[in-house]
Amino acid sequence: LTSLLEIRKNAIDKFSANNIKSNEPYSVLEDVFVPLYFLHRYQTEAVSKVIGGLDYNYAIKGGNQTIVKRVPGSVERSALAALLKTIDVETIAIPTSKLDLFPPRAFGYGRTRESFKSKVGVEFDPYGAVETASEMTLGFLFHPERASRLVLHKSLDTSQLGLVEMIDIVIKNTFKNDTYKNSYYQELQNVVNMQVLNQLFYLAANKNNYKQVTAIVSSKIDEIASWLRRRKSTGAQLMYDKELVRSISAFKNDPSKFKKAPSPKIPDGSPIGMH
Image (cartoon, rainbow, N blue to C red; front, side):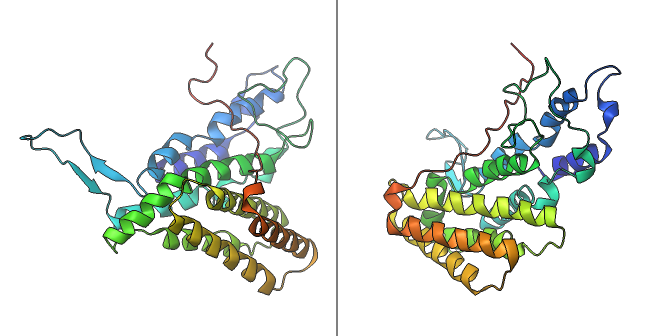
């Protein structure tokens, strides 16, 4: 995953009008960019399985295979560090220099299931791309069954990555890491933060969790609300913070009414362009 993110970065840096043929509309560039932007999607899913993961075989008695063992905590933490890069704004922000390459779609070249989705009509939506990318990672990370395994494994071995530790690290690298002077990056960080909260709501409201999971996540949501109230934001950021606090209050009043806000659907992956 780490290596592929480097390849992805280099490719995005070099991305230009030369990625399409002469006489093709610039609209085609957007679709060429999709598989590049989401180049890391399958490695992200694979690495997420390391967290709360098991190493096992369908072993038979008398064989010489590992039956089952937990993935070591040190490996889980390395996996988490790699996954955090996939929700780092500096990784998933589409450079402003590239946005000028994506005009409204030309006639006959409309969006398809393999295109970026947009919340701004005909205009290319860089916020939507970041929302989709961050939801992908966070959805894997905060999967209800994974959260329950983290609680279970931590109780069996204190060296394992626990749910409390994982959530704390995610919050530290999202909500508490939003000090960008670049207003574009700051807004994208708000998009990621909203996805973190949305996924925590979803996890806390899941009825199949261990009760320990619900308790931990609920407590961490309270901590986010307290942090948002304490920090001295101004302007639009203060408005966002107040809205997040209101969202948390509404959720805590009745978690059963929570409905996960949909993000722009991730475009179809491999095999792209096949019938």
